[in-house]
Length: 289
Image 1 (cartoon, helix red, strand yellow):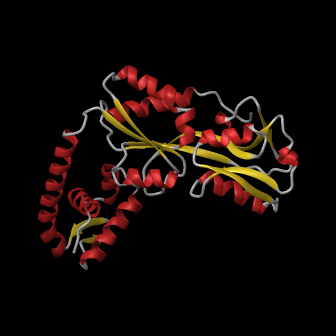
Image 2 (cartoon, rainbow, N blue to C red; image 1 turned 120 degrees about the horizontal axis):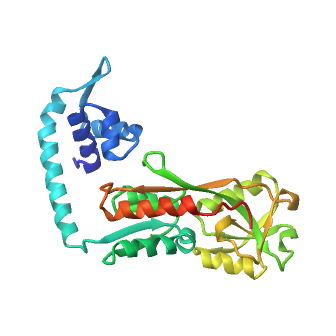
């Protein structure tokens, strides 16, 4: 039987605090996620660990017996993890975001972070939101700034911006039937939203161009060969914004969320988080190109 460290940590934290709500705050997870970890742990070991009576939580006999072993296992795990961290550069910040946001929002943020810490090393991971959030949950990323945050990860919404249909002002490609689309490859949440919205509106389309990068989508739209869906901040003056008067249904807004593991005031992640908060707070509001 293999014991999952995230389940062990949830068990020990709840056992020590005697509270699921306080444990969720300490673990930086929503309470339902902590409850699910405990339930999966109990199912894995075929034993009940907690008793809930009159709003109070206590350990069962099995829970009392397991607790000292769980504490020792986590201590060894954390000691090994600490040793590995000490062998890495002390000021390395692993950031997860999308290719679009990296190109549009990160340059100004990284410049400020660099001024605050000249020794800071940045490791940037760009990808689709599902993969990025998964890597964050596994501890492979220190901070994430992207959309579609899962419900079991505690985050804060920093920015809300509309996703919009665009085409080149020099082209009438938006009038074609079916409309040719330039979209990110499968796995991108923006792509799924775009095609589902067109399908719901019963507007014919054909995906004629796919890319894994924002630069690739910009090139396709700029060439006049396709229509695409982009957040307002990423558009250029040469693009035309399309709305319902052009036959294109509204796509709605995207929420950009921030989450990070190390909440110490002097940590690199906290510095980045504060920079990101200030950046989006002062960012001019955009409605369309």
